[in-house]
Length: 259
Image 1 (cartoon, rainbow, N blue to C red):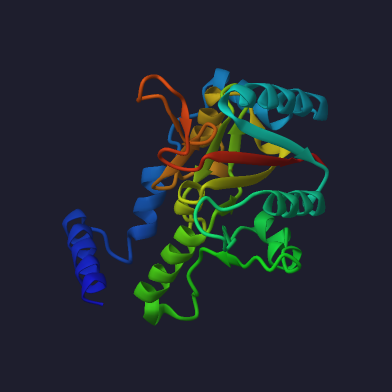
Image 2: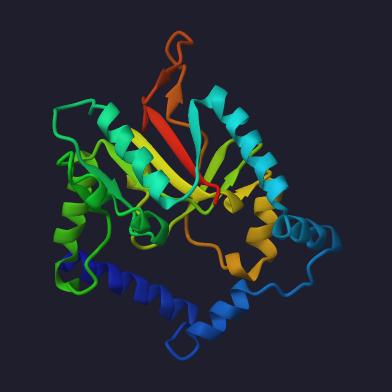
């Protein structure tokens, strides 16, 4: 509690120094994050192209993502719908083993798409618990205790299940914004990272991404943090021998719901 009190006092001191009060906070926020200039013509054309892609163009991007992911050890697996994605994750759990110990457990985001998979029920037959890395908003008095439990469950889990905001086909890169209920540790700590997205979330490259983040009101303002993930953790620092899982997950499975 003392730490939280110190943090609030520190933040309030900054607000006071900047002249921010409850009365003007929203006005200042809209002024800081608004796009004061018109969208440049080239960016407007790019936005239009991104937002109006046909199903055939989306299929082409998916195929490109599959090919670009192979050398990075990114397993891109198209699935028809949420039920097929859930079943694929159930098979993955059955076919894999934790790196340490014998107890299997999963940790997942509190995210609409991930929640729709209903992994807790799907994994009942295997006796594998599924934990959600999110705070109980009805119990704000025990934030430190909740944070410790979430951290413990993330560390104990051997599979972390997330979604993503976008995926860049040219570099096979997941782009994940930071939000409440979507802890970064879920994609970084477990030895296997599973991500589930929809096909329309696939972009061509960073130019597409930057245009959306800069000019599309649906994707602004930016969060305080974003993660870019191109395949599982890997390093060749020691004698130029490629090793997976040195600084994060050793395997990454991306299930793309095609509809």
